[in-house]
Length: 317
Image 1 (cartoon, rainbow, N blue to C red):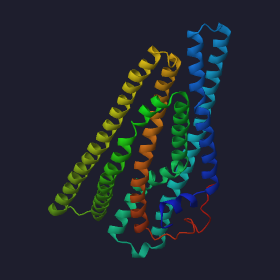
Image 2 (image 1 turned 45 degrees about the vertical axis):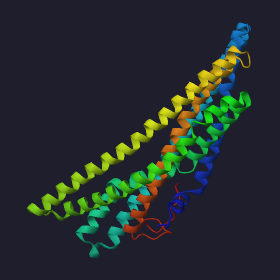
Image 3 (image 1 turned 180 degrees about the horizontal axis):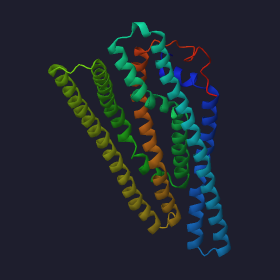
Image 4 (image 1 turned 120 degrees about the vertical axis):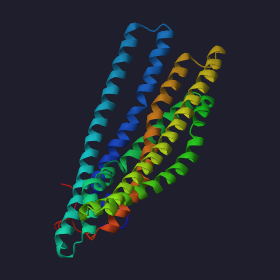
């Protein structure tokens, strides 16, 4: 297996990653257009535009939304296919290694293999499909919508930007704590699998298994607390951003410095970037966790880094 997660990602198909990247660029380019159409509809309605003009803009908005949804559908299915290719490769690699070293197998090794094939391969392989396209897509949406906000009203855009500054500090700190617990969880699960393979029914073995189950419970709960505390803080920051738009935007509308459509566009824009920002945070979490998981799988594997399970090319077909 490749030494790094990045090497494994590109081993699964550089061309496919490039295609996913291009689809992501198309998607975040299209995503900015509905905001402008929405702004023009509202301003047109408040300034007495004709019904025909409003209907044309409404149909244009619908066409853009359908286009965006269609590209996203293709992208998600393509990602899923690449992820399943990687999951299959990992599982077959471990099974092939088991077949080649059957005479040297111990119950401990069998337990680790069982854990990798059944549980550990899926999240690692699944990450391959989103590893490159996801950050490009979400960062592209953030950049496009952010630039559009700056174009409309720089001071309002500054209020929105303030939402993200505390998050850039909190996310890496809390994620490092989560990574430590994920590594502990995987190690405990492997030990539990090893003990189950041994079929030891003695009181001491039963006690050890119960203790490991309890430790898994405690570790999972600590992960939940960190994860959902971070989610709470992110949601709170976004609500503060909405409050800033309402206050500053309302003042600008009252004083005649901007139109009501601009405020609506900012509200829609903040809504539109909340999901990409959350997805980008989730991707960062997955990246760090998957790096830990991939390292543990690689260390437990004896499969070569250049050939697939049957000594053939591993590129997806």
